[in-house]
Length: 175
Image (cartoon, one colour):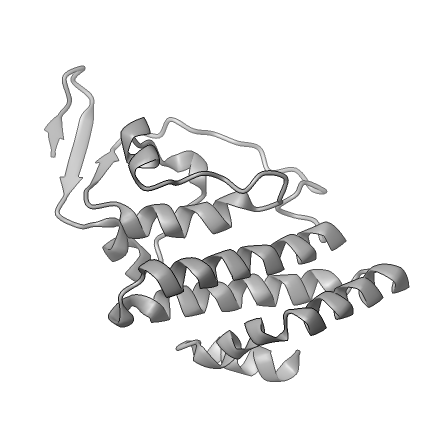
């Protein structure tokens, strides 16, 4: 542990963002601070207009991060209310999670080393699993639209077989 120029305790980790991803330590986007240069250099932007945009952005950002520093004080507080985006089921979330899975597949194909692909396969499955879960409460019209979306994007579901987590394989069979 050292102190930054303001005297605040920080720890410079020898780890990269990939190491953080491998440990499944991916917390919401609001817990990260990075330089504008890093974002521009890596063409990292949020997908506009989708729910759970950090689910799509954070893994890409962490995979490209070469150095991680941890600020050792709690600086972010939030109130999680019932009915919020993170606690409610919503048909739009199901469609957005399919988009997120597709974006993660694209990133995985273009940037991820073979030895690290399993990280993204598990994240892709989690997005698809959450999409399917959110579809359970859809009305008939949205369910039909969602089924058509799944049919059009059925190639995405090959990623369900690639998960290294037994739990996800069982859930694939159930869904």
